Length: 227
Image 1: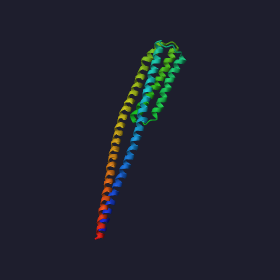
Image 2: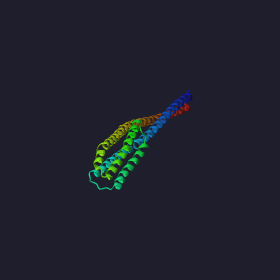
Image 3: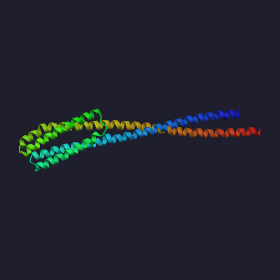
Image 4: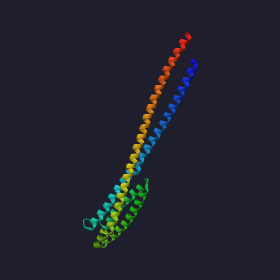
């Protein structure tokens, strides 16, 4: 009877330990996956949201810089030669094109793709208007150039800036969603870690209980043999 009791206790203990080990294994895997997901989310937040937001700021700065250069030229506040003016505007356009290429490599939402396409169309039209303005300035037709600058040029500039602002708002909204998702993952990982700690403590208590029972049974068996 003593040996049967000991065997039953061992089987119960083995079953309990196996269950606890499975729980620990499942929790560890879940925690590892949560950490990987969190890492990917944070990497995406930088790559697809923070960096593009910087690109948008630089694109906006280049647009305003182009506008200012042309305005100064039309108001005789600048004495740039036609070649120098074209070179200055071309430099800003290359900066914009470079930032757009960066932006297009990120993960775009449907609305972002539409707005970016609209911006590029306005930007292309704006470059053609700027080319016409430069030609008018070169032929000393500043009045006509000023009208083109303040009318059609202003409309395209405003539309381009509005597209940039809308893209920036999308960056803000999706960035906030990504942060909330990261918080959710972190909370899940914290719960898994707490569960893992609790199970580890439970395993320790079970082992202590088994050691205690083993000593008691061993003592009883010795007493039985002595009798």
